Length: 365
Image (cartoon, rainbow, N blue to C red; front, side, top):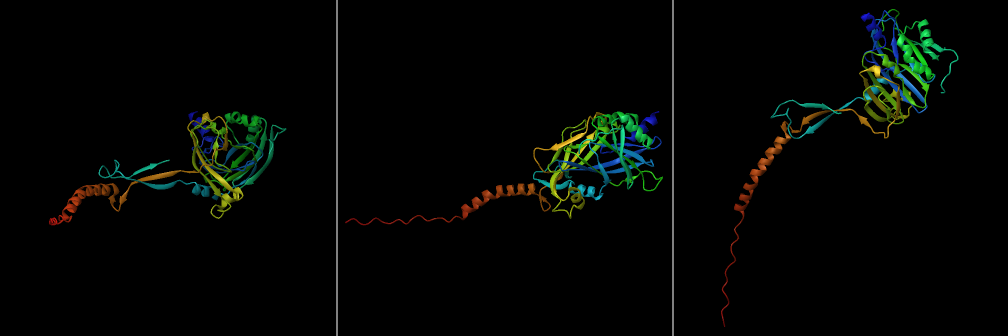
């Protein structure tokens, strides 16, 4: 029973996941998402999410469910988009010099000190409606509508997706809001092989006058979760709240002209339509995913303040191999000693001015 409980938890509790959906497999298999990275492009009326999964396990296939607020078009994304953004937002390393020696410097010690700073909502007549189903690379994608979470669970089960019972309860808020769902069957290229490695990116595009990132299903996870987002919009963006996790941390914020720099960032330029965008990279941890109480709603910050994570290496200021403070100290001592000597020497070398000649007074007449 303990093994069964642990296995059931592993179905929807990857060790590292972006948290925007639920991963499930059959009861005899396990799968984990080592990393899920998402890029959100939003122009004020349309939202596009590109995500990439890196998975491992012994499952020959798996299902991944993601709710979306409006009917979504689904396609394959460009894998080079993630490497471009990773390079663009990477931390920079700089050296800071300090003058006076610290505890680890000579004559106290000897090591350097390194520190870091640093469309309308759909209404389905039937409990479950199948919008379409298609094959996209390794993905078998079904787009669904549902007004009853139990019916949704039943349809997915009939089509080979075995879901934990509590997922039906977790889906209820989305059903009440008349959201739709993207149900994706993940399968390796070679039939019978387990799911391993990095899968092709999946791209979802839907209408939305507010920027939202689905997170509610992550409360089903039994291990700590991590969220990593690249947000592309007209302004710097921030989550409205923590939704049960730690405070979100911005690791990069800056404007990028993908039209001018399209040769440097071709995948990013293709996604944004070659228009200038403000890129915000956000990290957030969820030590207790059961406390997640909603989806991330993102809004523009008061100012488009740029930011980049910087790691500083502190080094003692030197002139060649000699510490500058030692030269300064020796120079001060030399000046203190030389100054009175120079004054004395100057006095000795000063020429003696003879007294004026004495002249006799003129004779009296």
